[in-house]
Length: 238
Image (cartoon, rainbow, N blue to C red; front, side, top):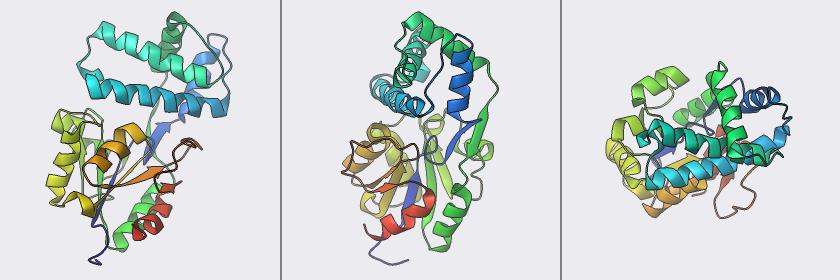
């Protein structure tokens, strides 16, 4: 390991290393069609960008996991409303809640994006330490098993482990402490500016923006990659 380059690369999971299986566009289109709404495929990605930012803001104030069932239902009605707006449909909260209920009825899981396993192995072979940092409510080891990251990362830190969600600095500090690395020698790769990059940057980590859905066109202040294979080149230039 060269002394003048970062030692460890932390990766966000949802939207960065893994996504829904079947894809979120398929899930949303199927759910909305049951209520007579036909969604623009590319617009769904724009909608998720808005909805995920809404979730990040909420988690910075009061985590979604701590909401009452009624509060959580209201939150996800608004979350779905933002997805639908991005996909070309301005609907009321009642309709959005019905679409979200149809989303929840479908069978779906998690799957790593095709580039992730070979990309992470390439980074390991280049001498980088790798870890995952996620807002998933389960423990890190369980998450790695469920998503398929076991053996591809050294460890994972989750909100289930720490009791705090990104952008809370506690989850980033827990990851740094586990790695025994100071912030300047760590990289944070994520698809959310508000949840992943800005809080990591405030702590002194090196932020890298993952852009898988042709989104975040308004953010040009961060190095950008479209898959894990691109991370090595970006990190070598930090």
